[in-house]
Image (tube, rainbow, N blue to C red; front, top):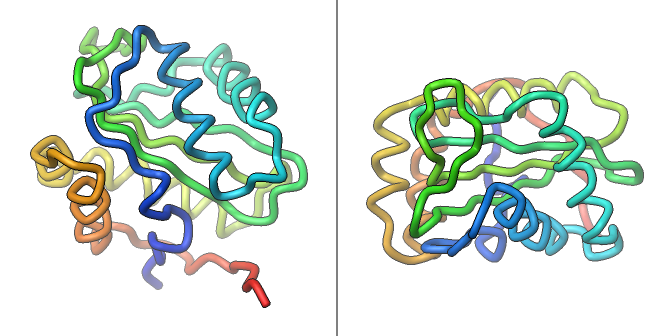
Length: 166
């Protein structure tokens, strides 16, 4: 089944032409975007989770793309954010390339099959040269979101189970 990308990332969680001084600053911005989907989760908790995950190993996918992610207690479903940096930052990538596209994700502490499928679909799509090119061509946050969602035909996997708000 096709992943419904719009269920894990919302337009207000996408930021184009952001300025980050460093990898750490980029993760701070990312945590602020991720908390928009779940304001009841403290921003600091998300930031610490991203930092802790990064300590385990670099989340760069090479070619200027990074996929920082973390598990979060109390989260029921995956949430994502996307940043296109105005100036690339060093992310300790194995190919030595600085990163200008950062797709962040927080997932439940206890991962289910759908969460693993979401993660696999995101990493596969971010490795697609065409999608990366469309994302880099965006000049506004709205264009960036549209480029991502229009590229969502690349996202395949298990359809995620989502909580529906009353």
